[in-house]
Image (tube, rainbow over all chains, first blue to last red; front, side, top):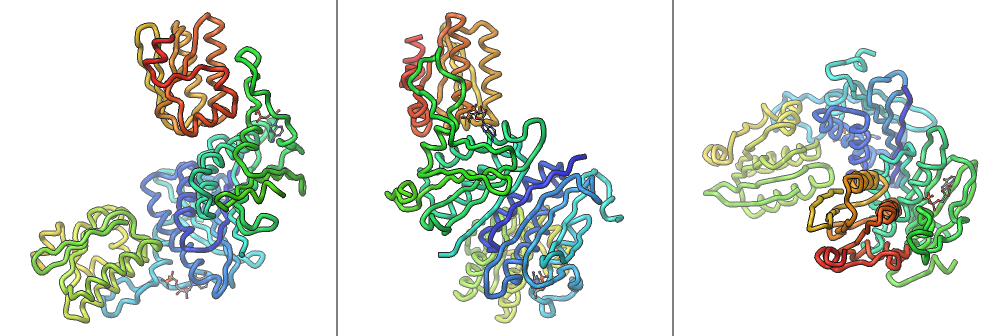
Length: 151
Length: 151
Length: 110
Length: 110
Ligand SMILES: Nc1ncnc2c1ncn2[C@@H]1O[C@H](COP(=O)(O)OP(=O)(O)O)[C@@H](O)[C@H]1O
Ligand SMILES: Nc1ncnc2c1ncn2[C@@H]1O[C@H](COP(=O)(O)OP(=O)(O)O)[C@@H](O)[C@H]1O
């Protein structure tokens, strides 16, 4: 199977969120991601994107790069969304899950981003490479499969 | 003025045309290109994009990259759409204008692409760099200005 | 996102439609803050028209609930279904808020 | 792009709407070819609903006109305005085709 790769690279600003979402959704649709998984992809990607806009380039500006990839190892039967920033080393996935059982008073406002990323993807991972943070959100293309989760 | 740069890199296939158009239109809108120039931008960009899909990667597949750039030298007051392919050296702008005065019988079917690119941009240029063809379509942002055309 | 406000008895019903994301959440936040500032203490958020809500939206709801609670007021949620319900569920909002099947039920409870 | 076909006397009126670009032009081409194959010799293309046409679309029109001419038929164009008119003008289509202000005028001339 051929690897298909589309890349969108834009300034990491909140007003680019709709364009980033449209790009990810188009890529996922072309790859054959099931419609019912689309909203989860959008939610996971919004959280990652917004974190970069808000935290990655403190006091400055920078770019965020999205790559829609299909047919690539080690996930040939998955849709992979890679989200790359050039900010300081930071692994969003290292943040502990929020306690979602607390009442209004005790609840932290925020901290749900990572939780959404974990919940709405079949697999997610992070690596630091060439001075960049690369977060991968992976959705399986097989109807009932959980192949990516197993790796 | 800061340079703002957004890049979309995708497989050079006709079915990516709507995504490419949406990207260019979003970029132009954000840059402040006047609405009445939008359709001309779409026409010029469609011609360049389709040529790459059809001619640049004979018998194979390849990528096409679009960059929306504003605030860059030597066109700080213009919106620049850069269209890059990795096919053989080819300057679309070297093709002569079609003879648009001929009757039905004599008319070549085709050859209008370059004409549209010239007509609907304020300026267009081409260069070969690092084994790539880079076509720039330039639209002025100033209402009545023709600053880019003058250079 | 679109926001429509209506007074029903002592309750202020805020009908939201469209997407509540990081781009639109600040608009919702300022609309709700303005209502609280004007003296609203019983607010019903109608999610019937909402098809997307991200954590930025949840944050606004949580902040609004805290703000109302500090004024002895109350925030009620109605018509939460589909993807919005899933987001509420995985965020534990189901246990923090009572969710009503209709605006009328929420108003009656408020 | 959407295509609606209707027979008016001896003329076949093809009402096109939406965008005629490199993606959609092949659909238009095969619709027109099919009509010509079915024996249509007087065809009116109604551009009233078209807001965009690129060279891929012009190519289809030119090819259709040639194909009809070779069968002693004729292609008439109606309701060309706005951006579509500009594209026709700069392509010299204004001198190749007579463009009618309405479908009725085109049918009457056909
Ligand atoms: N790209 C990033 N670079 C540095 N720090 C980050 C980045 N993304 C998130 N963080 C940190 O992780 C924390 C938790 O992120 P998140 O779960 O999305 O919640 P929130 O952004 O709502 O606080 C943030 O408050 C921030 O301190
Ligand atoms: N990217 C390209 N690489 C190589 N040749 C090209 C490329 N783009 C266009 N050409 C050549 O230039 C010719 C004219 O292009 P164009 O004016 O767009 O008309 P058309 O594509 O309709 O023939 C094409 O027929 C093709 O031979």
